[in-house]
Length: 341
Image 1 (cartoon, rainbow, N blue to C red):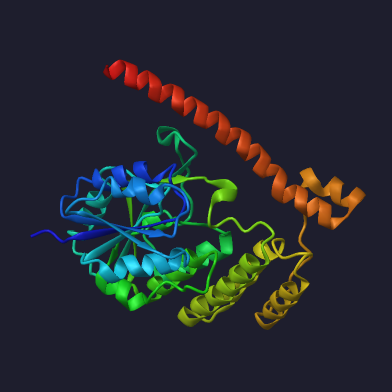
Image 2: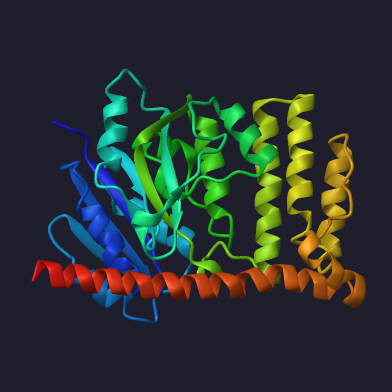
């Protein structure tokens, strides 16, 4: 009998997306699957919409708002699958995503092999997703994967992974203290317990760009900034536990430098800690620089206003792009419905 795969979906105020996400999970060509949604105290219609999909294979649970890590831990605690597919409530899986990755396992891989997949960014129209390969789109050892991620500031969304239950349990639970980058920290621990990453290019994930509505959006939130730095400290410790070398220390310093602008100048206490860490690693951090597009604002009005412009003006552009893409999506859906009739 083929292994059971558990598709685990935390959801909070995702009424606009949850139906499409559930359809993509239900539509997986891998037949032996269970789908578990944990509504994390949504205040909109997320729970009601999700319950419309309830069946023998789709379970809808709810809890008071505790954050995505707690919702994921709850979903895993009631799951039965031999493999785990994490899926955020606004992302989509290609119909054969899980099948392609499970087929890769049939080629002699162990249960400690971590499977990843290709992914593309989109707003509303998934068929317009932009699949842009990066240095993580290949088979890698845990240390090489973390070196590339941290040294080059790369990213892999939650849904790209397919993880055995054995490896999931070895990695431990999601850290409920983290308000942001909880996924980055979590998969570092899973990586540490794995025997390597198998990249399956035929498997695909559609990653929705939600902007300021995304849990991962930091903005100027002190609590999220503190959470981000806590995750960064853990990242550095995890990588150094795998290898203590000059290239690792250099990647860690580069990681701190890339993220420094998020804390400067509002959180000089965190900046000081980052500088101390860089010194201990044998490096030195430079004062972060604004993009050339906003440096003139800094020159005239100061760092604070220049930084805010760099953070918020792109969000305004994204809002217009999202509005336009949403309008085009509605037009396309209306034409499709007319064609079907």
